[in-house]
Amino acid sequence: MSAQANPDGSGGRQLLGQILKAQAGVKESSIQRSLTEQRQQGGLIGQILVAMGAATMPDVTRALAEQAGLHSIDLTTIEVDPDVLAMVDKSTAHTFGVLPIKLDGGTLVVALADPQNQAVLDDLSFSVGSPVSGVLADPESVRAKVLECYGEEESLADVLAAAQGVDASDPEAAAQSKPVVRLLNSILHRAIKDLASDIHFETYDNSFRIRYRVDGSLYEVESPPHHLAVPLISRIKVMADLDITEIRLPQDGRIELSIDGRPVDLRVATMPGLAGEGAVLRILDRSAVNLNLAALGLPEKDESTLRALTRLPHGVVLITGPTGSGKTTTLYGMLSEANEPDVKIITVEDPVEYDIEGIVQVPIHEDIGVTYASVLRSILRQDPDKILVGEIRDRETAAIAVEASLTGHTVFATVHTNDSTSTVARLMDMGIEPFLLTATLEAVAAQRLLRTVCEGCSVEMEPDEETLRELGPDARRIEGCKIRHGRGCNACHHTGYKGRTGIFEILLLDDDLRSLIQEGASSEALRQAAIGRGMRTLRDAGLDLVAEGRTTVEEVMRETLL
Image (cartoon, rainbow, N blue to C red; front, top):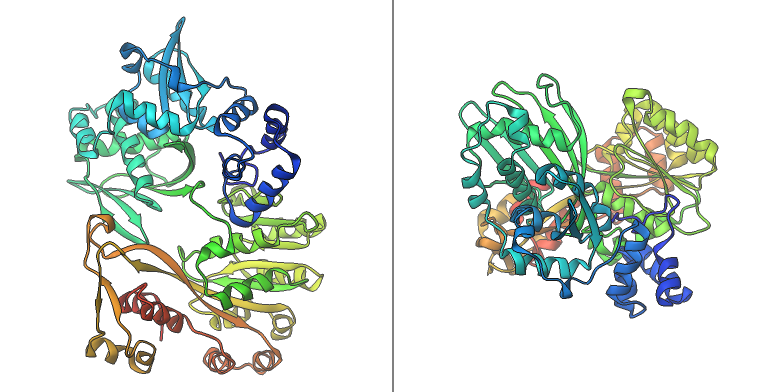
């Protein structure tokens, strides 16, 4: 199921709420309350209705089955033949949330935990060598039954051992072999469990390395032998519908999966190297995202400021920071706040990361001329109230964003700069005249993601003299505070950190700051003026978290400038 407001999607299909209304007598008022809660907090409609007590899980399962054109089944009454179980391996069953339940003639019938996971039926059909059909069951019952029938999931080490003897002389055949399929499934499943944002497959002359990026940092997992590099990357390319024979050029693709009953998008990028191809998979776990400002963990003042910016009738609001700093999540949170029936919102993104019900989202395809600038020109003819631009990369895009603001639209966008005040200089370098900038720019929010101290292994300590000396005048924010540090444990992969939180530096333009911009003031002069008006810097926001025991001085210094 997607992260869009209706997990059921639309696309001409009957809405889940209306099916529940007809099948289970769910009241329209409950459906509307669930939609409102979803806009505010995220989540899936069916789960929200169950939590409200307006529907039961069996009700939701039957409704989802009807919507997807499937039969539903109660797994608690099913006894599965061991010969049928043997047709699907343990790794596949655990990873994708599927359970083989019977043979119907020559067709294998499997229970699915996710109605959107029907693509797995084609893979199963290929691997078992017979037609496969699906029925829908409650996700919890599927997980419980898979555990009951197959036992605990195999470790990655066990799956690796089983794949050691794969013949890699024919990469295409090896990519379809059961050991390689099981191995990749296991790698993906573990990455999802570890909340990884990326998986790196790296090929060297005599080794093959796999690393997960968790909380912004890479760590290595058990790596397959070198001869499995080509079969594994070929398997990835097959799943992403890429050219398996093309190893000289980079390729980009996408894989949509349901892993352990959770909808996941994998953005695939392959890259040729001296020792062979590598690949990076960006993981977008749509079930884990909460498109809500309150979920960002902002201080109350910053949260109320961002909420206020969503209500602007016109103007440009920019979110800035390096790649992976959470800019898109912040923008989605702001758009969700503004997403009301009387407001038309259009986004242009590269790529569209999460579907949001009620918002028109346009993906960029530069290879066919669908660029930010060309789409923006068309968007202005679609009568929007608010526009999101995934990234301002060049003068043309910046100019159209400014033009849109001048014609009565609110424009939200990202830009790559180090802090809030240097964004002004960046836009002028792109060719935006100061008078246009001061007439349209309302706010710039710079952000970073800081790793938080692992609660399972944190200890209290006094800041040492060297740390205070390195901080200089900023040390005053943590003087007298008991700070915390993670010793490292299995839960945090011995890093001392688990999870991340955002810090923000919000520049709100007033008349005095606009005058400084018109006068050609430097970024530093603008910065000092903004601080004098109460702007909290990224460094200050980070050290406030240190004082609260939520992160470390080292993490703040790594991610922020003086």
